[in-house]
Every structure is written in structure tokens, then in C-alpha cells.
Length: 248
Image (cartoon, rainbow, N blue to C red; front, side, top):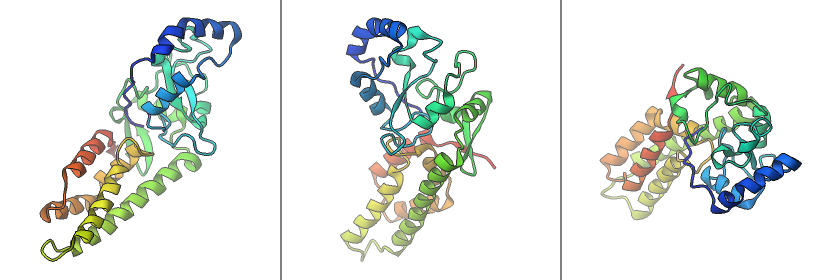
């Protein structure tokens, strides 16, 4: 889970909010299923579930609109912009009608998840009661649907670090050609981009990469051979904001 920046309320929603709310109260219809609502929400999360960071739009993972404070209890917030989040069906099912006013969980547009969560053996754990309840309510360590996919992705990135390190150690700045250097740059950029918010499970991937001693070694060699670039540093800086603490 990563921090999300909520954009301004869509103008059309601001204009129609009162009417949509009344329609919901009368008919209990899905008034939030409007493109002027769903499109900005999905863009806000980079097409990912706001909680588990799976890719929305894949089979069985189409986007649903999450009412952080449950609509059945707080009808006046049914299309309140600050109450809406993009979510996958799995997380939505687990959260259900959990009352977040009574027992708060993490709203990633309000709180910074790394303040409340840490990583232990690819499993998310709570640093505090808020983090623990969030993990439990959303079942964020669901082995089949979440833990295994993020483990595979993070492991694949670690393999890429080893491959990049082999390449850069063999590269001689004085005799190497532009193609060799470009291949190294592409591979390192690919690693670091997966640690940024546009990519699935970015919090876990950023944590694993930045905590790997081989990554430190890779960066050191890149710097010494004058291959480390400003955009690599930009990607790393973004990754640092997503990184979770690691505990045994």
C-alpha cells in the first residue's frame, strides 16, 4: 500500500452530488458508476487497487468504487469525493461494510501507509493498531491472490539486480561501446521504475530492492563507472518514499 494524492473533486460530481445522493437514498442504485467518477479514481491510483496494489482491469480484478465509510450506514457520503477510492473486488469483499468511523483503517489518501506498516518475509505487518487492523480486515497477506504474486515480482526484480551487476562489473568505461552502456542503463532503469508508484506492488518491490545489499553494490559500481544518471536518482528518490521498514 502506498500514499495516494487525491485530485480535486470532478466538477461534474460537485454539480450533481446532491441529486445523486437523493437518487441513492430513494432507489439504492449505483449512482457512483459514472465515468466522471471512476476515471479520475483509477487515474489517481495508477490503475491499481488502492489497498493491495494489484493491477485493475485484469481478469477478476476489475475496478470497483470503494466507499471508505460504508454507504449503507452513511448515505450522505455515497458520492462524497473524499469517501471514494478505487478498489479490486477481492479487497472490496473483505472490507465489506466495516465501519471505518468506529474502527479506523488506513485511508491511503489521508495517511502514509509506511507510517503504519512494515514488511516481514514478504508479509505486511502493522506497526500499530491501525496497521494491524488494516492488514486483518483486508487480508493483505492472502497467500494465493496477493502474497505469491508480489513475492514473484519482487524476486524477479532481485534477479534483475544480479544480472545488472554482472553486466556493469564487466563493463570497461575506456574500452566499452555505447551499446553495452545503453544495455546496462536500460536494465537499471527497468529495475528502478518497478519501485515507483505506477507499478504493481510498488511498496513491496521498493522495499526489497532498496534493502538488498546487491543493489547498494550495483549503485556503487554504476557511480564509479559514471553510469549512474539523474533519472536513476529520481526513480530511487521516489522509491524511498514508498519503502517500508523491514523487520524479522
